[in-house]
Length: 126
Image (cartoon, rainbow, N blue to C red):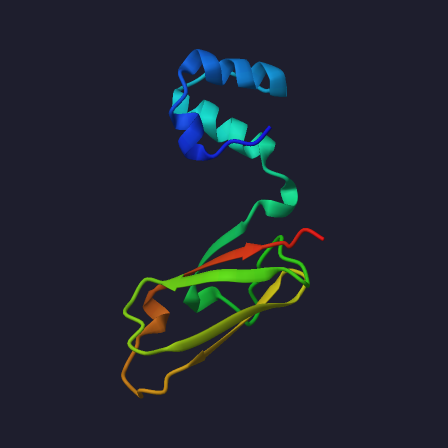
């Protein structure tokens, strides 16, 4: 059984509850809660992204990114300030460790200590 979030949002509540019954999951709550449960149930663990959100002042070195494993892919990275030409690379370098390299070829001032870094990391299915 596969559904997109958009497909589920187009269904009536009674149809969503029927899907919950087939999946043997809780069907009570608001429509948005039911849809979230269905998506969580039908998404294989290997496709569930590990989303991290740490202030840069406490990010690596020394900060663990729980749940990531060697071989995982960093799909996206965002910071809450203007990137002003920054070149960034992030990769999983060990269990629970993401290495982030930032290069500023412009030389312009960027205050990274005052922002939050967000990563989306995914595990490939082999």
